[in-house]
Image (cartoon, rainbow, N blue to C red; front, side, top):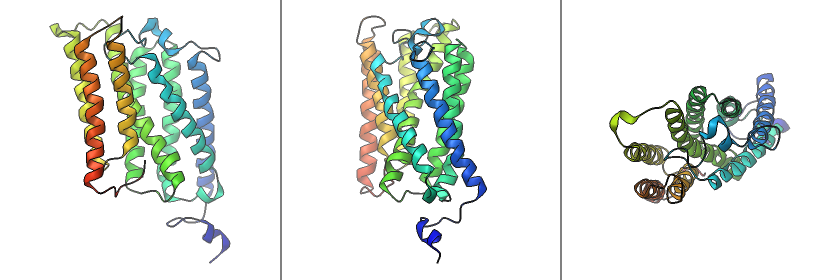
Length: 277
């Protein structure tokens, strides 16, 4: 057995040129995503997302818009993505089956996230919905691929499974908020149904998706915590001045708690024998 083979994790083969291209692609996509984040935060030429598109993404724009502090989760997600980009570029990671399975899907997710920021900055709400739906789909595929190939280390659990889980859980909530912002800006009247009932219906959809994800992936915590985080901040926003709505606030809080409880219950029922993250 060669020294190279001894350094490579179980189930891997020798690195190929395609592996090097993938590693470089992840790094480039991460740099672009981080640059987009700086631009979208208003720190590098753009405007804060809450101020673009006529305020369509502001905390008081719709009944399912989260309060401003909710977006602090992006700091954790971006830190995880940056750490992942460095880790996956190591020689020992080049030919790993997990990196090959998830790498290009994460490249797509990073680029779609940057494109979404550009769409939001340009006020292209309909296009932003299409982009975030594609982003959600890419993250679901990434999550599924990782689910079928369990990690082998703490780095796997934190930088890959954990980061993808947080990213996915947050984007589930963000997709619903994005669709609501677009419909409001488009003048959607709700077919005579009250806005609060529409909001509760959307929150039920998020709760169902979050619980289904818990059963599907045997209780992985990070998607549940990220989704619950977003839902709690929707509840906070609806309990404050502006678009205050007690029923929606209670529903959002209940949805967040339900997702966490179901996830923990599934995890405990399986005796903790699941992928980390």
